[in-house]
Each structure stands twice: as structure tokens, then as C-alpha cells.
Length: 48
Image (tube, rainbow, N blue to C red):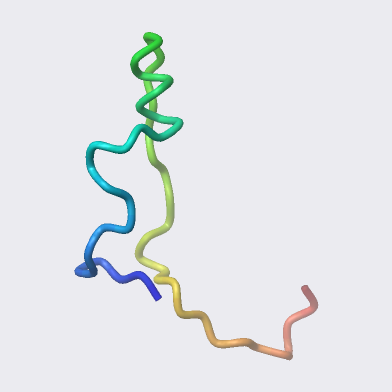
């Protein structure tokens, strides 16, 4: 599990898609629902 205070999993100097696009003049952003966390309990009562 990756938490907010865990070490980074991608080296800072490694080029990723976002940095490649930024180098080509694009603006990038990261949007997510971080407050939900990454450790979800399975709920069998839902229909999805």
C-alpha cells in the first residue's frame, strides 16, 4: 500500500509521461480523490 508519508516509488530524475509532455510545451495536472485513501474494504452489498 502506498500512503501519503511513504517513500516515492518513481525516482525524481526519471522522465515520465507528464514531464515528457511538459518538455513539449503542454500543461499537465494531477487530479484525484486522495482523501479516499487506497485501502478499501470490499462491500458485497453494493451492486457494482
